[in-house]
Amino acid sequence: RTYDQYWNLPSLSYDYVIVGAGAAGNVIASRLSENSGISVLVIEAGPSDEGVTAAIAPLLAPTLTPNTPYDWNYTVAPQVGLNNRQFALPRGRLLGGSSSANYMVHHFGSSDDYDKLASLTGDNGWSWANMKKYIFKHEKIVPPNDGHDTTGQYIPANHGTTGMLSVSLPGNSQVIDAKVTAASQQLAAEFPYMNDTATPEKIIGIGWTQQSIGGGVRSSSSTSYLRSANSRPNLSVLINAQVTRLLPTGIENGKLAFRGVMFANGPNQIPGVVLAKKEVILSAGSIGTPQILLLSGIGPQADLQKLHILPLVDNPSVGDNLSDHVLLPNIYTVKGSDSLDGVFRDPAQFQTAMNTWTTSKKGPIANGVTNQLGFFRLPKNATIFSKGADPASGPKSAHWEMIVCNFWLNPGVALPANGSFLTFISALISPTSRGTVKLASSDPFDKPIIDPRMVTTDFDKFALREAVRAVKRFASASSWSDYIIAPYQTLAGTTDDEIDSHVRQLSSTVFHPVGTAAMSSSSSKGVVDSQLKVKGTAGLRVVDASVWPFLPSAHTQGPTYLVAERAADIIKSA
Ligand SMILES: Cc1cc2nc3c(=O)[nH]c(=O)nc-3n(C[C@H](O)[C@H](O)[C@H](O)COP(=O)(O)OP(=O)(O)OC[C@H]3O[C@@H](n4cnc5c(N)ncnc54)[C@H](O)[C@@H]3O)c2cc1C
Image (cartoon, rainbow, N blue to C red; front, side, top):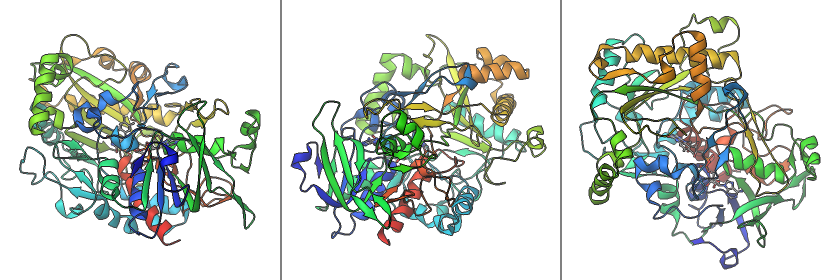
């Protein structure tokens, strides 16, 4: 049951208290509550996602964030690598968390990513050989909602059909689709066609996007994992309650136990407290989780003392090692009116598309932002590799990604009044820049200072520059010659300096922060061990994207879901 006042809760003590009903938190809630003898409470800062149209209608995702009541509305610190610009870092603040706000691209990363995780943590349970089975528990492939034949667009044997989250191929064919496929054929050596974009053993190449969409509506952790568990009497969900700190509840084997959770529904509101009999599981995401740890006195001692927070567990890694994929829009002006810009610009076209979606759950609104995408590597002989090690997880992992969008996609920059556009996003997938999440004050309702320090290393600058050049080669394939008019503004530059300037002016985030409560086997680094227990504490784990010590070669919901599925097994068997 869902409650929005804590005094209505059935109890103030549960076996497990989960903080955050996001991608990971709802997996844990659903899996632990499968055992009717276990009581579970989920505490979520935001409201319900039910009836929130922008969280349901796929193409409306870009309107749900930023600057809405369903977003934490964070802004990054001035980015020294990007002309000191500041920009939004959206995070979902509703049931489902960012899985209710994301752009629904769905895949898992490369097998190398999981094998690297196993090697960094010394725990073979994270290796791909062991993690692969969770795909089948997690996903349920459903037909695209236009019912087209998907032969050759994905490999059915590599996917689940009985899992929790609905996943489908694009169901709104677009004029550019055939041009993308033809460009991939014309330039097959550099842009090979991929017959499945979500098979971790082989991710390099371009193919059809898989999306967390079923029947023309978003599939989030809330609509899948949580809703299917919602009728269980042993599962309670408290919404509109922001966790402000964890409370120490005793000492076990020389470690402080944190089984108390304090929350409030706003500044100056009366706080509530609940207790976990077994464990507190922090699933507040890569920003929320370090923020709560720091507010609870778990973090770098000197930083906490400066803010007059009593340091209880000194751990310099909390909030450190922030890493995010960089989003760079490479926009072309194009001929005709087949792009989706008209739907976003013209209220009459938008209303027609909305009517189609409302009555039949079909049409452009029923689809995500991209039909095709691809992952790519820098050439083996790229000069940057003589200056440092290859940061990709392994030879099967990517350095950059190309996402093809049939419209103007330029976060924070308004769609021009006229013209049709095609955006090839180049995303930096294996960045070496690392940043931080720090508290601005000891007030839990103050936003933390988020500084991903994007594009501050030679590798990141090089990889983005070469990704722009590769996009230009893709756009020069003959399949585009009757469609593309010209590169838009700064994309026209060709020299290193011009491309670097384009990167600095337009780059922002793909919304994939990880690493701020990283797993590690080291005693001096990392926040959680390979079992996701917070080092130096008892009764406390972290399960969310923050435990990934590095960015996988993927949009991060799939890798977060898989980590959460294994985490549920770890917790059940503890
Ligand atoms: C705009 C956007 C687009 C994205 N697009 C994609 C995409 O297309 N494909 C993809 O794979 N990934 C995408 N992502 C990323 C993906 O959604 C995240 O990686 C994933 O949801 C992370 O899961 P999580 O459980 O770590 O955190 P979240 O899903 O963010 O969940 C954290 C939850 O904790 C809650 N919370 C935080 N602090 C507190 C507190 N103090 N008290 C109580 N509750 C709290 C939050 O409100 C939230 O519900 C996107 C993200 C965004 C924001």
